[in-house]
Image (tube, rainbow, N blue to C red; front, side, top):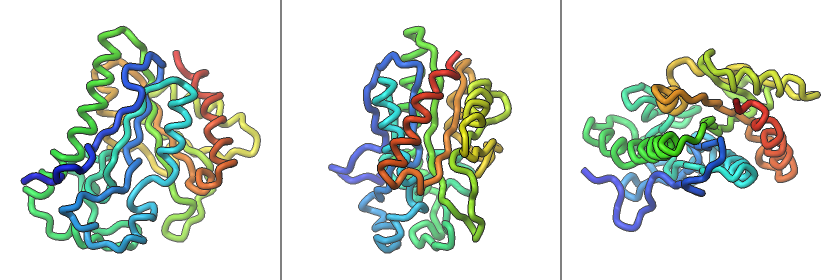
Length: 249
């Protein structure tokens, strides 16, 4: 079974390939496109504008960082509602049937062959592209800090999230600890240490691509309301442009 039709874009987009910056930026939930064959997963267009479909503002932030650092950026074209590229394919949240109160009709009763088609068309090419860039960098002797860029909603399940930014890690990341320390010195900035989510084994990109490569990774989370106003988005970008170089060892 082939998921993508002729003329549809590839799942993985790589910008500034082969850059020698110490950073490799990835954005798992950059896109909100749905393959034509899936007919918007039975959702109204308004649903695909919301955070259930993508990380609002994350791609723009990633591109700002990539431009400032002269770094390669790899990002996903298709919505996480098709398949979540930051979850293991066998995880219950890989292809969700309910997202923040929205039922996703096109994900109900999915046959194994249909799930496999999504993995082959969307998940596998994205992670193969990240792996290829990391392997190329290693072959050229370029040290790498993998930076995964995400955004989160200001509220969830009735809880107003106080954090403005967060850093997710697996408790073995010197760069994450150093960044948390630097962020903690910023006046008036509420910082989440493994908040609003914890990297607890459900994440895929950072732990899998670190493994066996001897590299570190930081996973950034930024509250979405701070990325939707242009002036605020610039301030957030400038914050990480200033601090991320200080954690590279």
